[in-house]
Length: 329
Image 1 (cartoon, rainbow, N blue to C red):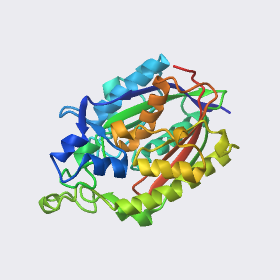
Image 2: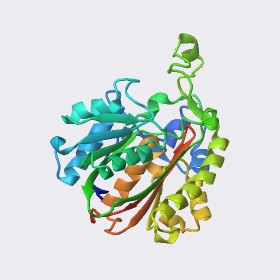
Image 3: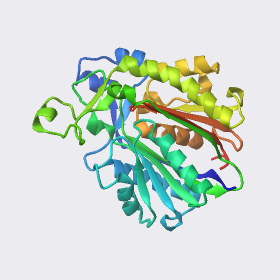
Image 4: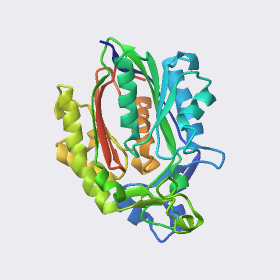
């Protein structure tokens, strides 16, 4: 049986930094309030000419370069996002065109869990023999979905993209994946208007229903409950335990969630990777961006076990266990 292994990784971040001091001039908030409740100090914001597909394509180019591959070498593109360029065509198809690939391309939309769902799709394609190399992308321009008058949400989110190249290998890289969903919690975190249920009418736009609405306390309670369960389940399906993981790489939603995750798993806080202070919540892009940070800073070594975990609207969640086989930077 062939396995999926990571052979390339890349990232892209917009140049503009939006600091807490900037937000103090925009809404009724303070740097202390934001840092205490979220751990965030700044986030990146896409320029007017940038889109989810353009960010995703830049991250993908970096991952292809890291793998020493070209567009013609890719058999499938799977892109996870919550902020597509359009309802259709798919953002993955737009990335495919930007890269000059000719392979199939598909979006996966599971909110902040989208990257883990995309990783599952890509891994299954390789393990089944239907693809040899797959480009997996998490990309967001979430700032276009934010109500910049709502201090409860506008302080949280940022833009960016990360990408992996998976390749068929005799050596197992992706060891186990566990996915979950609970649609009864759909109202906890939503962009209500813009789809077939609630078209984006003038009235709904004036009511700001085309922007993110979130019950923050409910999201927190959901996250701290499902994260440890999902991580343990994915490790168990890989015949591993919490002690075997070198790094825990969660979706970067809130530093308090990350700290609670460490406590409930019984691991030191410094083994739960965090870059939320500088990037904020980048939704589907947060996990590959975190992986890229670890890689480019020389903190990944062959054989390291990584426990990735995402959670978000839907409600959805997912965890993946990866053995790092690529080597050190």
